[in-house]
Length: 333
Image (cartoon, rainbow, N blue to C red; front, side):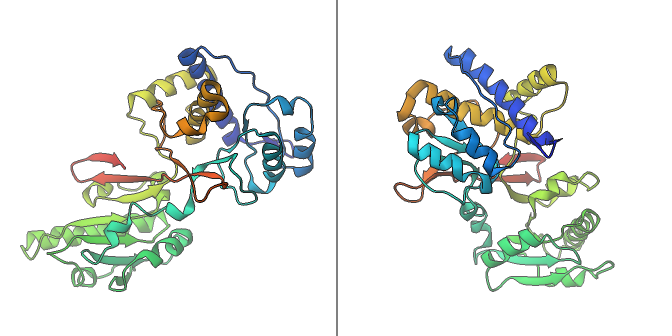
């Protein structure tokens, strides 16, 4: 919760969401839970002291620590004493055995739900800019077909550059690499204007789906109508539909208890509690069999925990594909 005396708001929000999850477990199953909270200060030596304490050995479940470089002592302890340990936010790279659970989705499956858009049956166009999202670019470009058209957007760019590579027969999948909010807004407006011009001139009616970075969801001043008009798609590890009644109910409880609006970290804290505390309390050491079967009222994206091989850790394989549709609906797959 704090490093060098400085509190980390994200992890406090996670813990507050976790506490509300415990309330729900108690109400649903009538089970009380004793919680010991440790501030690790992102210090491996401190974590070794914690796991060697007598109190820690009585644990039925360990949640955390957050950072992979400090997870090894906990992973070793979990293996020695047969206690499941959950990494709630980060990927586990430093350890690997069947009592470890990673709530963050596996990087290898990140774009599985987008691959169908990049097939040869679609017309793929890539638009770069002066400032690109480097991480997104490195991840997405290897997935694109060799036939993909490539354009570099500049201010005042002529319409013919994009018009000449759009198809009227195929689905046009336009991957926009821009990371800058102002430039991204300009590129989406440019795409929209070309589409409007082609339709107005009855040249063709190009079906368009834009693929972008999940970071766009945090843009404050971008024209969100363009997300819908251009059928934006992006992949994210964190998504909660704030129009969903379950999420609204959680928001009200969180605001009443803590006096602030919950973040995605608070939602993850709640979900981790419902997923793991509930199943461990109900099923004990046999809980893994029920982890993917439980129909729990979770707040965020689906979770499905899989092992890549027997004896290895369980990783969440589910990323959320957020789809803005031109009928002004948002679908999450």
